Length: 173
Image (cartoon, rainbow, N blue to C red; front, side, top):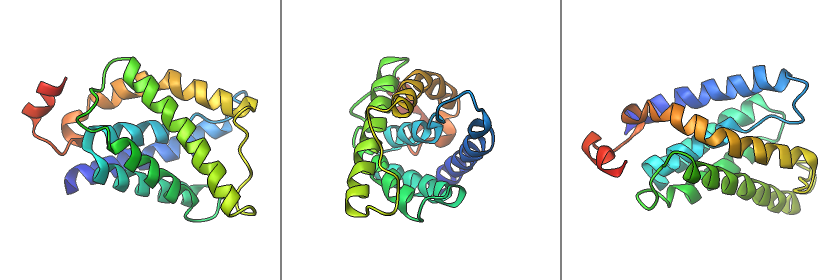
C-alpha cells in the first residue's frame, strides 16, 4: 500500500502543479476545473476509505500549500470527500462514462456543500460559494465533462495505483 500511496502522491502533486501553474493562467476560463478532485475521487473509489482519506488529506495539504486559503481548509474538505467516495469501493464499477460523470458531479456538489458549511462555522476564513453562480456552474460542467477523460487516462495506471491483486481488478472490470 505504501508504494501505491507514493505513486498516487506523485500524480496528485503533478496535478496540483498543472492546476495552479498552467490552468489558472488561462484567462478565458471563468474558473479552473478541479482535476485534483477528479483524481481523488478515482483513487477513493479504486482503493477504499482509508486510501481515499490519505489521498484526500495529501491532496488537500498540497493544495493548501499552493493556494492562499487558510491552512487546513482544503485538507479537511478533501479528506472528507475521499472518505465519502471511498465508501463506494467494491460497490460501483468504474465504468466508461456514467459512473465517472455522476461521481465527480456529486463530489463537486459535496465540495460546494462542505465549503458552505465550513464558511458558516468560520465566516472570515474563505469567501462564500454561491452554487448558482456562473463560476460554480462552469466548474461543475467542466468537472463532469473531464471526468471520463481523466478516469480513462488514470485507468492506464490502475495496476500501479491499486492496493488489490491484479486478478481481482480484472474481475471487477
